[in-house]
Image (cartoon, rainbow, N blue to C red; front, side):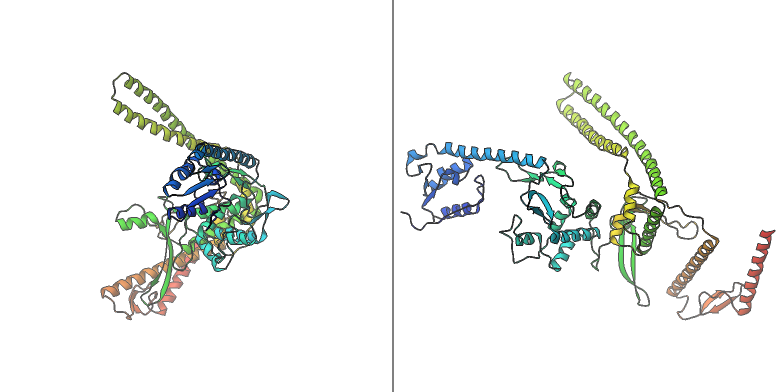
Length: 596
């Protein structure tokens, strides 16, 4: 009998796979000279790949002096005649594996095409229905975590940031949670010493799963042969069956999370990500706007924060010393105030004037689509003409080559160029034709916006979720100073409805007077700024000593006078009274002439 026996068992592993843990340990022991005799039930226990099985039984075992016995097949390596049919047995073992693989794959595809889940385990957030294994039920404890992940994503948090938050709050990670409840593919192998370890790729994978909208997704992966490893399929090859189980996340939130996830958001020194990232663009060159934040110190030692947007092309051209665009600087505070006002007025108008709003959006959408479709049709017609020209050119090229008037090398070069251009044109035509088809689809954008507006009926401040749900893009124009004031146009495009102009009533006399008052104040503030700037320049040049009175000119008598206040207008009280009496008399004369 044999002594010093060791058992090598790979339970649950396929015989077509030689990367089995116990098998690898056995091979290592054989190479180390620890194995003298090897006994197995039959050749299929070694493996079901006839080439590799033959290598081990015919070559490796012999080279390492291992006595091999396959009991059921009557094979003994010390008896030469016993292994004559071993190659045929190995082929039959592999054929059996191939046949079983075909049957399983066929059943798998039938089940998948019928809309039943092809996965053995329900994903995190769901559990299998005890009464129907092909139906999923919501696992409320895990579903609450899933909803929170999507909520954080919509607020602008990235996958790694969300993972960090969940780890800090000691929320059980999916693998540990499922294993604790006796579910999941890793229930026997999960690391129980690290129950709260969340990773960015885990969160990112969860955010892209349509299953959380209540859909069944089959054929995410496949393998061409039973010998190959599974590979991920392109999303276009997935088979999606909608509304097969209860949704954890509504489609609008899921789509919004995908939109936010596509834009990389970097946190600043305070650890806060900018919610406007990827939404603000230069109206002239189309480039993204850079956000500049920082602290600055005044001459008096006081600090103030600067938070502005400017054209990225302009900022980069300063470094390159080449002028490619112009400054489009706008403060983030003013931008946020304008976004808030736009959302508030548009949402309020849409809710209060529902039918009028729907008609207005539809008419604007039709005009936009007609203009875009007209331009696209012209472009498609031009590209089709060029494609037809290429067909003629390629045909003539073949004829010239066949007649011996063109060298083979030159023919191949020209032909490759024409065929490449034609392939690019065909791809472009397919894309543009798809866009044209979309124009003919009637989408009720107004209803979507109304549903969104009703979610936010009362708000006073702008939040990250509001920005992501409402704002499609923002175009910032260069400031216009032709009137003496800095006027800047900013276009805000809202999701579903684009740029929408809310009908505004004619301003009242009180509103006009208030606006004029604000304008006059802006002028005075600007004049004060210019005076202060001029004084600072003179101090820097040594023309004025700090602390000395200002040298000014009286607006009434025109004489020079000194004052400690830079905005003083009159040299004495008598001049001030005289000036305002004259202004009052002029106003009365103007009013009398207008009445007459």
